Image (cartoon, rainbow over all chains, first blue to last red; front, side, top):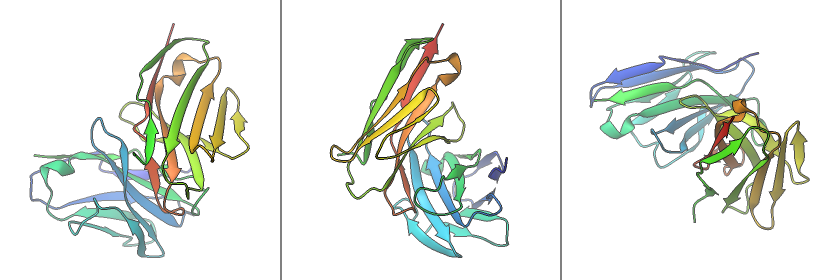
Length: 114
Length: 110
């Protein structure tokens, strides 16, 4: 069964450093998403991406965040200058279409900012 | 009012029991509704979509009441493997954005 993959599974970084989280969505999917989950809290939407553009973003997704689809397979989330409060699990998701189409989630990258 | 509200639980039930989870949502324009399951420190996985007419998948039944903005999940004959956090999820962005509840924790015991 096709699945979303994410690398790395864990990342530890120093406050102020840049991190890039990588995702490989399911191959025939056209819509891509990033969510985050701070430990003990709910899953929160960050951004959706379609046709090489951001479709929607949340208040969390400020100027420190960016997304990119650098080639036909990868989808990345960059955090320019990490803060302590960026420590969370970051999930990538993809779907074939919008609305009722299921969003399939990757296993996540656990980011720890020290 | 929270966008998606759930009782956090935990619900501790014996194996074989029937358990029901409820959820309310605030955005009346929401069009798509889902139940996801999340195991500890894992990604959310779709359990089932929720349709206006109600739908069933084996031991799981989901109901939607648009007038009351209320979603439910019924699990019959619960198994130990059903132990997880059940996430009520609403599409609040016209297909671009899922909004999650905090989840309801279920523990099925022998």
